[in-house]
Image (cartoon, rainbow, N blue to C red; front, side, top):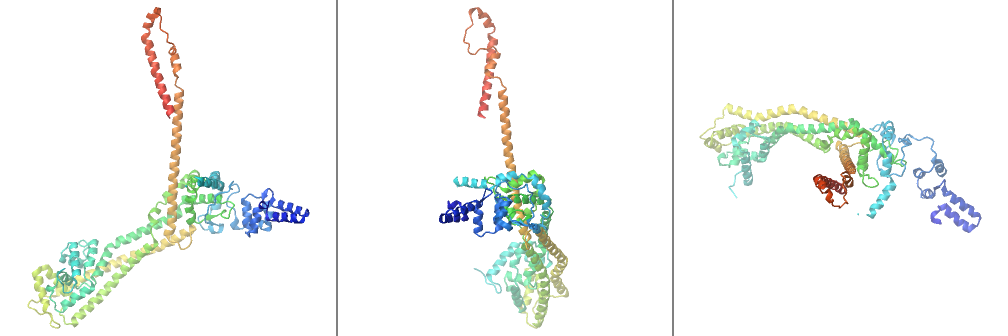
Length: 623
């Protein structure tokens, strides 16, 4: 029939029908050619006709078990290769070949050249000894293709308020509420700001205070108000508070930098701790001999499953797709994963290698640490350190310009002296504040300081104002010099960690340009799946042990009951006849009465013993 013939055989049969007896020999030859050495060649002829590469057809013939002579007669010169190249070196021994068609294990293989500089560079030495220790028969039975098809078929069968002169009323109200939350008097608050007192103003209080201190625009408004002779006593409480701070150039930025200075040790320590964790994880991965043993065993099992196919004869594999496939590759009966079988195999070959999960426990803490997160934190630190220098330079320029402007306008004193004098008056009480501030109400350009009560601006006041303003600059300059070197150390540590990561990624065969989190997460997920498989193996063994213990107890109880005497034997021993209903004769009455007590007690003892035997026998039956 044409459907069971090759194309050549079918053509020969048509020719035989047309050309008579002479073509019969052609038909016989064609039919003989379709089957060589007991191997049906029709599918290979069909593959050749479809234009498949000859090497692929020859590989298929080898997988189907065709002998070399048949392959050479079919493939011709392409089936005879003089010398195998380095990439075609066979890493698996001749005796480690599957007896059945295996399920494909779709990993990403390396050839001998690609693996020469990776963790698999010694695979040719280690693979033969590992092959002797691994039970390949289990792999044959669990992961063969025929069993998988049967299992699949089986499964398919079964499925409103007072207005202010300068500040917006809403803004003034918010400032009042915010200052009340600080729970400090205005004078103490201003004193702590000027002296940078960390004990009185913690980081939390500084953060709360930051939105309520005056902006540069608000400070300029109150400066102009005072310079133009405005009466400070006519201002609202919030505006008077701003007047006391009018010499503090860039007060918001100053407090932000103060917050940064207070938080700097913890910020830098956090960056160092995360970098140290990543560096330790990289070193642990490179130095783990147990992990190396596990990867070599995976290489052997994968080569065995892919024997004879283009995926076989791998001298290494890429970590990223391969390790994730282990848990998803199931046995033919869908009850066991390749990961679980791998764990059981490692436990038999080298149980110590299972402890690699303990060696790399650090992965749980560091796999989420992002390179960009570290870079952003370091950039923020460097930016804030640079802001300190910029602020101090800008502050000096602003103060110089402000003093020059006030002098041009005819003011007799500087803004620092006025602000410092007002703060001092405030500490002396409300009346002193009122009388002192009245002095500024009649300030005119070029007229100095008129008024009935003239403020006493002595040289000490000017020095005190300069000292108050210089505190922040001195503290921040010292901080910048001391801590800037630590930032440079962390930067260098980051560069070294990135360089170590590139070496480690190359060692494990990852592509170039991978960040450390992309590499670490692969091993973290593999470790999680491996731990899960270890737990499954332990549960499986516990169940088997419990079942074995139950069987042993059942056998012991059955043996014990078998050794107990039966009811009939007990009665016979006591010289009793259960079937006898005779009554003792008159002549034996006395002797009967004499032994009546002992006979009754013996019968009762036998009865109780038989009852216990029956109860024990019933318990065995129940079990």
